View 1 (cartoon, one colour):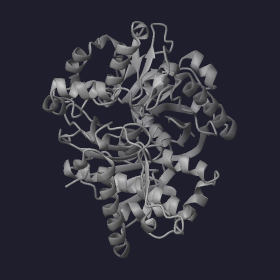
View 2: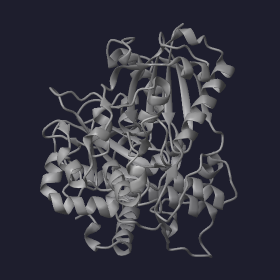
View 3: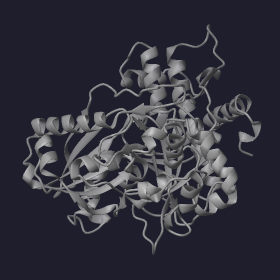
View 4: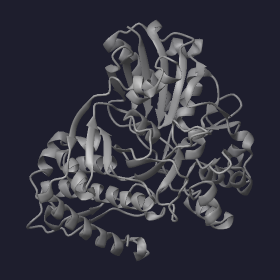
Length: 501
């Protein structure tokens, strides 16, 4: 029996999954740490994590996986990596981390990106970058240049979180085209580095690492890393991708019209588009998809809601640390619409679907004599769905077909109320699969290492658990509640034209 190993670097934890090559099935999976990793918040709207902590949890997860399953490391054919997108890791010439990583939900660079959007020209940015520079990695690097010049002067290479893990494994500082696009370091029109933005920011392209293919032997496990992990030196690292392109890949979403969703710390809907179109207000964003080539470009159009699983996690603490499955049971005890209780799930940094405006969460319509714990939990889950559907409406207006959505049977999609609200509010069919990001990374490693000849072969073991269809008798109720939610959103956010026509 031979194996593939996938690592998923999340902001809450590190997951490692071991795949049996012959069957394509996951044989073991672990998560480390058991409690969620902390985010440092030095100032409101900021969010940082120490990359060294990610590496330590990768070590812990690998040892745990070996202890629980006892696989022969010499039979490991490839390692794949997926990671939280948009983070900024800074390394000096000796490979040391210069400061905590500025991660995906950090909002400090919003105004820097907005100014670049205005100065370079909105039309130019959307035609060339398919995005506003916004709060993405390039703008975060500009923030460091402006505010921490002594650190900036020591930078040898920048890394995305997955690039940093790959560096720990291989000793090589690299990235991918897909990774460059997620940081707005990529020009889609010229299919080259976004030199115009770098020049505007006064950033040298020399700070960007070597570019490798997403599916390829990008490096091999060093003797030092192998000893630390209990693996075998020379094992190939053969895939890396950001969490949302990888989530789509893990669900075999590779072609135009196919859509993936996830409901983790953040909530994402990600659809494949073969045209270079952009939302005029950059509320949804396009990145190079994992299987894109120069000859056949494929882009992933992504809408992201920061306040998804993190809202559910916060609410869990507020209701006495109930198990999530018990919260889901309680949510089902309240009626559709939670008897007028509405939740705007914004409170985790600047939201792109709100044009990068920082926005607080809002609980509206609370009646002490009507609403109870089940109403509160249902209102939160429905509010997340309504915000996701708001983003899907923007995607639809941008030309992305959103009819059939695939998701892993995990996180928010474990909730029957969440699933019911999702399909009925958005009028979509939902397919749930037994997979996760780490399994996707392992399959990608199999393609990159040549173990699988094609994605078709790689996904032989992907199992669909269930299909959820809209229920006509419920659709009107959910869509009425969604309409009320949109009205509340328009009133609570400025300007009021954020409400879709």
